[in-house]
Amino acid sequence: MTEKKLKILVVRYRFIGDTVLTVPFLRNLRAAYPDAIIDMIVGPVSGEVIAECPYVDNFIIFDTTRKHKYENTDTERKTFFSYVKMIKKQNYDKAYVLKRSLSSALLVFLAGIKERIGFDTEHRGILLTKKVKYDEKVHEVESFLDVLKADNVAVKDSYLENHVSEKAKDKIEDILYSLKLEDNPKVLIHATSGNANKHWRSKDFAEVIEYLSNVRRCQIFYTGTKADYDIYSEIHSHINATLKVKPINLCGELSIQDSMALINKMNFVVGVDSGTLHIAASLNIPVIGIYGPMSPTKWKAYGDIHTSLYSDRECVPCGLRKKCPINNQCLKDITSDMVIQECKKALENKTRNGYE
Image (tube, one colour):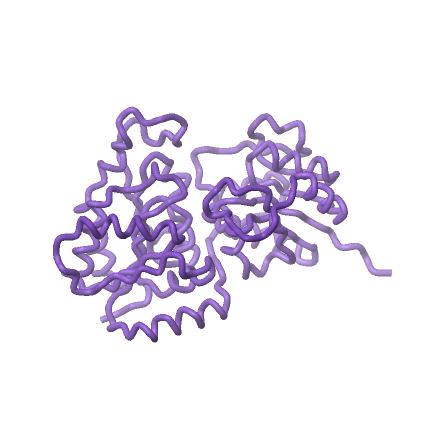
């Protein structure tokens, strides 16, 4: 008679950045339970960012809303209670609720999972069998690992990693070959975020692009959704000089995995606080991050090779908890010259995917 395998459910749906930051948690969980069945609930689009993760047996796509622009799909939405019913049938022994919402804890509670470990947030502690304090002053990767530690699971390491599909790699190789690019440094500029209050001024991005293209002859790329395309058009309206190396705008043309494969070809990434910066960090691509109202300690690109630029105003971080009375001056405090200086350093260091 075969012994029943331990069945574990991890809950962290929605948001690309939050999802990719779970990988160190998943790796340590798998090390602790090598023979367990580990399933994970992820968002319909954001889940693609870890679709190749070797530490998860099955992904469950949680699709009940179109609230966030990165959750838009053509699939039919299900109800919250249909997921309760489906999860209940799986007879999980344990659930780790990495999402901090009340509804995510209610989901595993109603599904009858015996052990439920998660953050003691949004007054949901009564729904959990083990409550974990959420620390606002540590990086989100460390917060996720705190959940394992609270459950007496050994944490052996905390480095961020990710995996890209071979299909996506082949697609990007074909695209780059077809473009017949010169052997210039490759830089991704990422000017968009799920929240417009994290956006940097278009004029400043334009000046950085002019420097990279005309002074350093870098090949610049843009990625994002179809809706993001216009943001780069707005940035280019502030560019007065003819760019010597024309940027390539791939917004709306790439899947999450495709974008990951492209980012993996970059020498470095310059961008605003967004999931794309976390993707780059997970691929060990240096990031120059422009941070405004959110805590850089909590949300910066994770790792020692990255640069975080942020204001030293007393109100930073505000966490976007209320409307800013000074019109996001924290982002305006970061000048194009500051970013250009960091780009110079990155180019002089001949960062990832070296060049002459």
